[in-house]
Length: 254
Ligand SMILES: NC(=O)c1ccc[n+]([C@@H]2O[C@H](COP(=O)([O-])OP(=O)(O)OC[C@H]3O[C@@H](n4cnc5c(N)ncnc54)[C@H](O)[C@@H]3O)[C@@H](O)[C@H]2O)c1
Figure 1: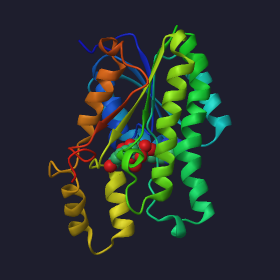
Figure 2: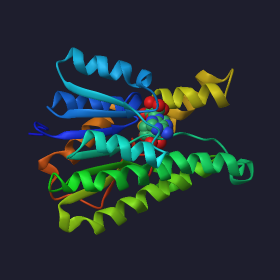
Figure 3: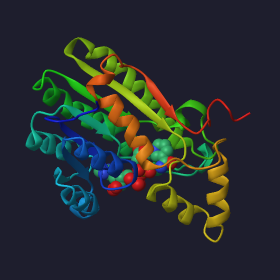
Figure 4: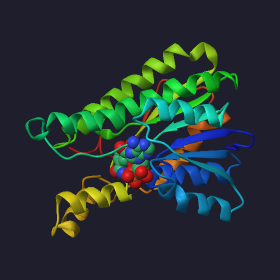
């Protein structure tokens, strides 16, 4: 079960955190993995980890927010079976503390970046007679996390894009789903804790852990396992759905 032999998968932001866990697991399951990262350097440890287990991996330096770069990268990769739209950035702020330039930057990466990769990937999925897309959303799209205005807005768009794509390409054998994690312990979380809560890192880490009723953050490997299931042939009946993976965050928090 859950074999990805003979599948070619693109993972955006595959050099760190959730994307790295997905890249490594997909390679273990037999996929040829193409990591899209801002720089070759950011993909380096993931590439080394995959090569160490004898997996097939390539890395591509490409900013997902730049359509020209994205199109050239997908052209180079050629026909694909799987796209994981995972690259994303965080921002802490309410609407009145989110300047336009910051709002635009979050939209450029978290929304336009997803659009750019969808735009470039559809023709390459057609060449394989279909395939699977996963967009990384967030529980922020479901409940609107306090102090995450631009981020929650962007993830709401990711969920809507998922439905739109699932409907438009269902007859072309392309399945499209999203995953909505609650807090997962990755460099993304460590980064915004140190940037926004300097001096109170431990206290904030504990607070963020306890915001999941299960009492901890998720692990990148747990998200990767769900992504593997959704991309496998065993999940052939699943499209147009969002999967919360949240330690009870959405439904058990009151
Ligand atoms: N960690 C969490 O708690 C959490 C929760 C819900 C959703 N998510 C979502 O999961 C995804 C991955 O999060 P993570 O925690 O693993 O993040 P991370 O910061 O550890 O990794 C993200 C990767 O994306 C890359 N990236 C960023 N901007 C890029 C761009 N413009 N072009 C190409 N690559 C780019 C970064 O270089 C980085 O390697 C994001 O979309 C995030 O919003 C994370």
